[in-house]
Each structure stands twice: as C-alpha cells, then as structure tokens.
Amino acid sequence: GESVGLHLPTLSVQEGDNSIINCAYSNSASDYFIWYKQESGKGPQFIIDIRSNMDKRQGQRVTVLLNKTVKHLSLQIAATQPGDSAVYFCAEVSGGYQKVTFGTGTKLQVIP
Amino acid sequence: GAVVSQHPSRVICKSGTSVKIECRSLDFQATTMFWYRQFPKQSLMLMATSNEGSKATYEQGVEKDKFLINHASLTLSTLTVTSAHPEDSSFYICSALVGQGRGYTFGSGTRLTVV
Image (tube, rainbow over all chains, first blue to last red; front, side):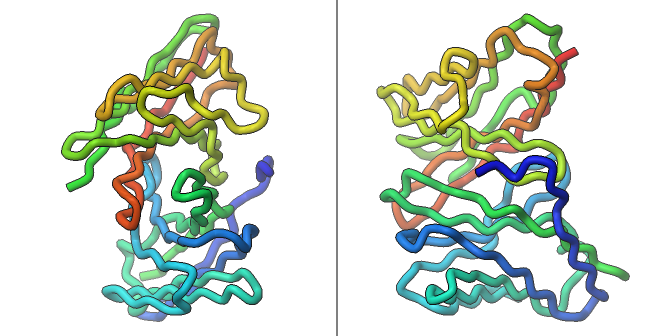
C-alpha cells in the first residue's frame, strides 16, 4: 500500500566508515531484487541486483545480501564517501519482470 | 547503453489543463515501460505498466481516464495528465525494462506543478 505521510528514515555515517542499509520485502514469490540510488530531483540509478537463488553478490564497494527466510535485503557500502549521500531504495521484481515494487527508502547522510 | 530520455524535466501548468510527459528509449527497444509517481520524501509508487501496442495496466486507485498512457512504438511512451489539479503536483518518473536479466533503466523524472 502507499506510505502516505511517512518520512524517510535517515542513516548518518562518518566518511570512510561502512554503511549498511536494510530493506524488508513483502512478496515471497519475488525472484529478483535491485538496489537503487536516487539523488534529489533525479531518477533512480541502478547500483546492484541479486537473484532469488543467490544470497550474496558483490560489486565495486557494494555488497547485497539476501535472506529469503525473513524476507530481508541489505546493501553494504564500504568506505562511504560524500558522493554516496542520497536516498537508497530496494525494489523487488515479480510477475516475469512485469511488476517492480519499491521499498520505502533510506536517506544516507555522509558526514565529512 | 540503455538510456531513457524523459521530457520535460519541469513543467508548471494551470489547473484544468492537460500535460504530456514523454519517455524515449534511445538505444534499445522498450517493449515494457512503467510510470511512477513520487511525492516528497516518499518512495516511488507504480501507476501503470504499459506494453507496446497494448492498453496499459493501471494499479489500483489510479484513474485511467485521468492518466492516459500511450505506448504506440517500441521507443516512445507518453503519460498525459488530463484536467490537472494541484493535488496532481508530483515527480513523475518513467522506467523501461531493458531486457530480462538486464534490469530496468529510469528516466530523469518530470517535476509537475499545477497552480
């Protein structure tokens, strides 16, 4: 349903520290998950994805973990930089790539 | 590769008028496109899914007669907000399925303000 009236949770981290952003998804039939980064006034930007038959995937400075038992997804950012400051959304994909549902989002603030 | 160009980036219109937003896939064929609306400090809410040559599938609560979606070609989808009201003011974003296993790419969004 719609998250009307809610404010984005905020995660503040010191520059150079690692960040962990969490997401709970709802559909156990979702077969693909994606993390997006959105800067103010812009469209979402792809970060990393993971299929439901995997539990971990690593990219450059980012790692996504998937726990299907508890329907939980996390994004780990290593050595967080000021340029990482943005809102991060997880998205779950189902219905043969025909349905993409976004999570509520987390605002990451990097403290220089 | 896999770029979606969305225009306009900002539009201000008077209440009661209609506004058209365009999304073009520049270097791939977009058989499936999605339209989202995003209010400040909130997530993206899916409005409708359109497949080229077919009628769009609207999410529950989205008025199909108010938000007209046309996906007549593999490279162009349009969203027309008809008889716009101030409560339609929002950030509208399109997205295209690049291909199964290749994910989705998003437009840069359109900030609509209805006065």
